[in-house]
Length: 101
Figure 1 (cartoon, rainbow, N blue to C red):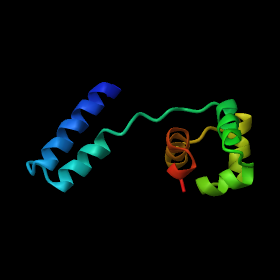
Figure 2: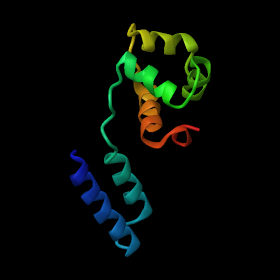
Figure 3: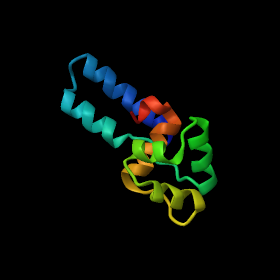
Figure 4: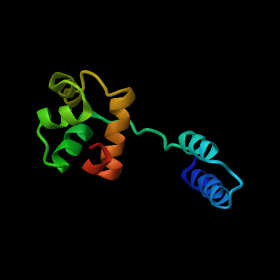
């Protein structure tokens, strides 16, 4: 979904919720459906993101709830982040450390 369309849909749903026409459950469901697409990260982008926040591999791995070995594999390009870890990397990039702590 394009960002502008996503924002329009969410804005409308939030307005309807504020006016009492849409319940909390519907609002939550729509927010979950309209999550931004996850960005994929190259090995170099992961290293750059880690360095941007002055984190060593051990610390970032702990924040992402992965092993330091897994992070090393990402940073060398041996494997790529997936699932919840990929979502956390996206949150880190979008919202900074407060987005994942």
